[in-house]
Amino acid sequence: GLQTLLRMQLTPAAAARRISTARALVWRGCLHRSLQSSNGCGSSRHLGYGKHGRRTVQVSCVATFKDKDGAESAAFQELGIKAISEKVGGIRVRQHVNPLKRELQILAEAPNWDEAFADPSKPLHVDLGCGPGRFLLLKARREPESNYLGMEIRKKLVDRGALWAREVGVDSSVKFMTANATISLSNVLADYPGTVHRVSIQFPDPHFKKRHHKRRIVQPHLVRDVAACLKKGAQVFLQSDVLDVAEAMRDDFEQHGREQFRVCEEVHGPKGSMPVQDAWDSESEDNFVGEWSAYQWLETNPMNVPTEREVYVLNDHLPVYRMLLERI
Image 1: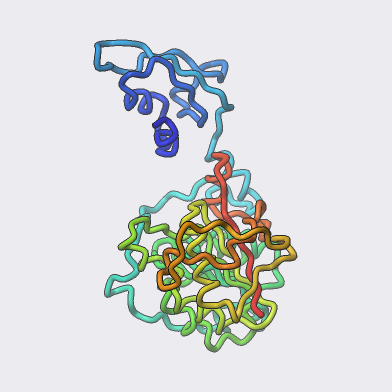
Image 2 (image 1 turned 180 degrees about the horizontal axis):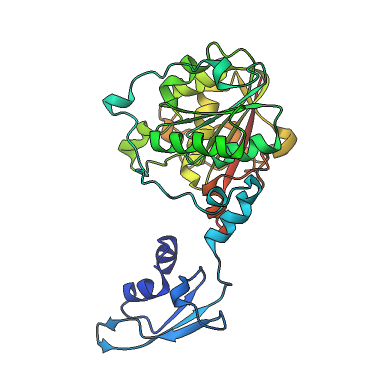
C-alpha cells in the first residue's frame, strides 16, 4: 500500500508509477530538489503511463521540503570543519557486512593505551559499531573529561574517523579501531588502565532475515562481555530505528544479563503494565517477553549527541527506540 511506498523513500514520481490506478497522490515526505515547485507546496506533473494509457497524476505535498544534508550540517557544525559537518561521503563502503566471515573472526588486539590516549586513566566510553564516528568526535568536544573508543568492522570508516579526529583536534581522547566488537570486546578492554563507564550500541545493522539474526552485534556472549567490562554504576545505551532490533537488544540484555543490569528508572520512569501475550514458550527466545518490556522507550537521547543515522531518521519524523541500562 501507500505506507509501504513511503517507507521505501521513493520520490513522488516513482511512487505514483507503482500505483497503476492512482489518480491522485498525497505525499508526506520530502521531495528531491528537482521536483520542488516554486512555492514549495507540490505540483501537477505527468508521472508516466497507466494501464489504460497516458494520464496525469496530481501530486499534493503536505509537508515542508526537508534538506537532509542541511540537517546533518547543522547537527555537526560544532566540529568546526566544513567537510566533516556537511558530508559523510568521500569513500565507498559496504552498508552491510557479514561479521561471521572467516577473516572477521580474528580477535582484535588491545591498543597501546599510552599511545592511544593522552591520559589513559580517564573513564572510557566505548561505542560498538561506531560507523562514521562523528558521534564520538562531538562527544569528545563537549565532554573532554572522558576518553572515547570507537570499534568498527569497516576499516575505511576507521581510517577516516582517525583522520577526522586529528583535524578536529580530539585525537588525544578519541581512538578508532578496526574490530569485530561482538567477539573482541573483552580482549580489547582487558587491560584498560582506567574504568569503562559506558558502552553504547546505536543503530546496528538490523540483519532483517531470521537466518541472519546470528550476524547481529548483540549476542548472548557480548552481553556477558559487556557486563564483565563494567563496574557498578556504569551504563549501557541502546538505540535503533527498527523496533524489532531494539526489542531484541533489550531482551538479550535482560535474558542474559538480568543479574548484572537494571533499567535506569531515573530516566525511563517506573514500569507500566506488562504487554499481553497470546502465547508463551519459555524455551523460545523469539517469544521471550521479560519485565523490561513494561518500560517505555526513551523519547529523547540521554547522550545529548546524535549519530548520523539518528539525524537522518529524526529528520524524517520517524521513531527511535532507546533504552538506558545501569550495571548493578
